[in-house]
Length: 347
Ligand SMILES: Cc1cc2nc3c(=O)[nH]c(=O)nc-3n(C[C@H](O)[C@H](O)[C@H](O)COP(=O)(O)O)c2cc1C
Image 1 (cartoon, protein in one colour):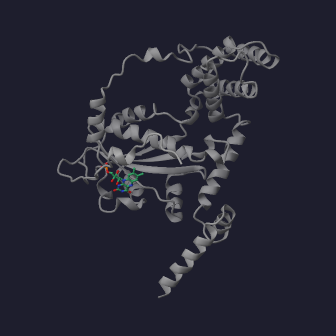
Image 2 (image 1 turned 120 degrees about the vertical axis):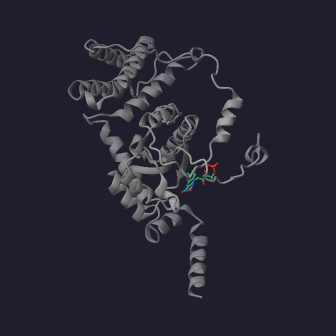
Image 3 (image 1 turned 90 degrees about the horizontal axis):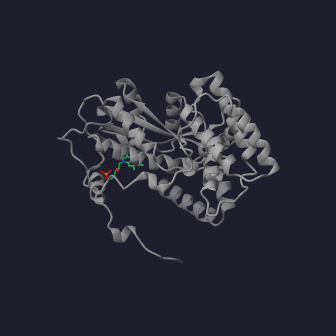
């Protein structure tokens, strides 16, 4: 009786607040803490992004984003003679700090990323027309280059033709996708780390908004840690204790300066996750994505175990290992093309 009354009140309240975005905000401010962690993550992420612009120990996301914009500017048809005026100074300043950091703490800087940056900036200054801002930054950039020891062999932007014909036929890809199923029962053989690394190398080639790749694969292959991690999500009941390895995929909200882009970490990480699963499959490994619900006690335990900052969000977990040939799989009937696809439907 009481339960039904509570349900009826809740339904009425939701019905009322659903009438406006403002009422929904009031509801979530005073009646529910469901979005509190997400709000905090977004605020902490924005703050960290803003700080990196002045942070001597790196501004990787800012630099990557701006380099991406420069590369895009260079491939435009027609290419503008003068572009990027509003961010080229910031980009070169950021690059300068990365160079400085490479000298003082080389372990904190990825040299090939720095070479990419050098290459993109060099090309940009080669093709840019004359403008007081560009001329001034060009001189500054070229002076920095003088003492850069190695030089990049890459050329940015690329021509599509260099990729050659596709190396995988459609039927092969379809077969691989069909073969991949969520595996929950594994042989108790350890998974070689290089096999996991090879799968991450494929995942790393996935598209991501502005090429930021705001995620990290935290891999656990130590029996005790696997169990500590695997016991946190709700969806491992029954099969959690037999996992030979588990990955926690983490999204980094500080890659973005606006909460309008807060969903991109989930999208980017999930695209990478799919490539990771297929790459595991291609090497004979099975995998199963595991849901990570936004539940306060679990979030707190995971943040403590992994040492996560408030802007670092768990996207999902992925169990992996060599499949037990005797283990059963769910049939998991897939929707038909007619249900999944529509052309040119509007309104
Ligand atoms: C984001 C996500 C979360 C999932 N969470 C769980 C989970 O917690 N436990 C589980 O056993 N399977 C989980 N799965 C696996 C799905 O149940 C499975 O992908 C689906 O039933 C389709 O089966 P298939 O992967 O074999 O095609 C998850 C899958 C995804 C993509």
